[in-house]
Length: 92
Picture (tube, rainbow, N blue to C red):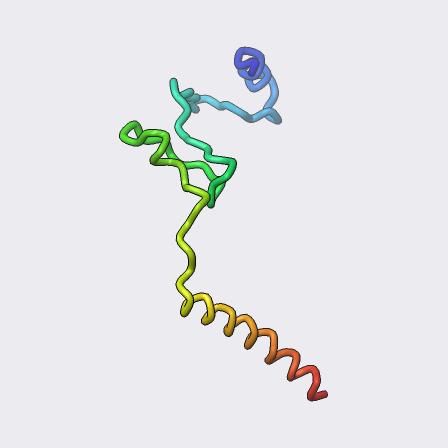
């Protein structure tokens, strides 16, 4: 990033409008986020916390299986949500 050039352009051109009198530009010494990608449940970014290590940010790929009752409740709800519109269309 060409910060001196950006400041110069901002001073001479209102259309650049990046910095104005009284604005502050703060660049942190360290990145403030941790991005987790790959074989995880949620590829996302988290705010950095010095109290956490890398394992605290990782969501493992293997998760518990859904209990049978909860699984069949979901399946039944999906079938019901499909069957009602189909029955409505067939009634015309």
